[in-house]
Image 1 (cartoon, rainbow, N blue to C red):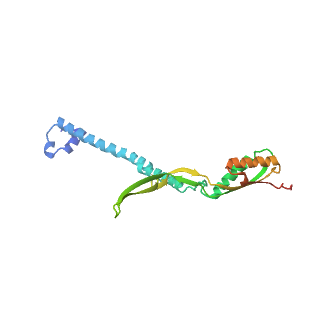
Image 2: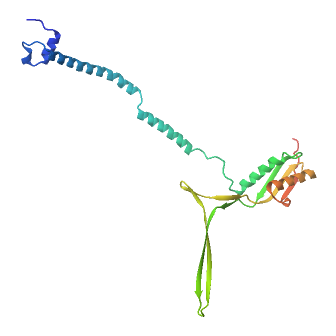
Image 3: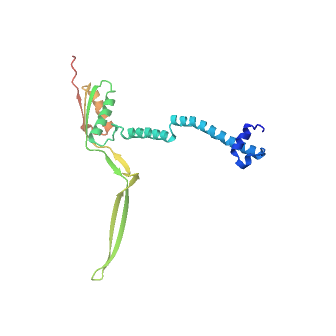
Length: 231
């Protein structure tokens, strides 16, 4: 009895019993063996290669986790913007706002005049600013012919007008169109400073205030300030 190779033994296990006895290996047997070996090799290599990839997947965060963390960061920044403290800047809507603006403006100007020092100013305004809005005007005229009992005829004409403020929609807000904003009228100005006891300097200050604020001279009062005592 001839010794069989390990290939023949492996094929012998794969073949049915009625094909094992007394038959030589054919090309079909070798092809079957190669196919089985190839499949086995692929399975083994896939098992060993899947383990490192699983480890890497466990170490690296998924794309959804990254997106979630980024969206969380963006939302937190958005919340900071929403809850950001409001600025102190505000539109000049009150009388005090206009008075403060005029006082600061005059103080900066008058302190640059030669001989004038330590200026204090009080400005009184009549009211807040006056806003003039854009309006759509509609005019309608109707004529009626009437006949009295004596047969006289006359025509009666009636004219009606309607005004509507022009509104601009900006999202959920509606804003009227402002054509002009008039500053409030000034009731009086008081200037107290050092150096105004000089007649010429006092005259210069009155002229400066009347021209800057467009007020008559009789509404401007200028008085000398008491000198500060040395400590």
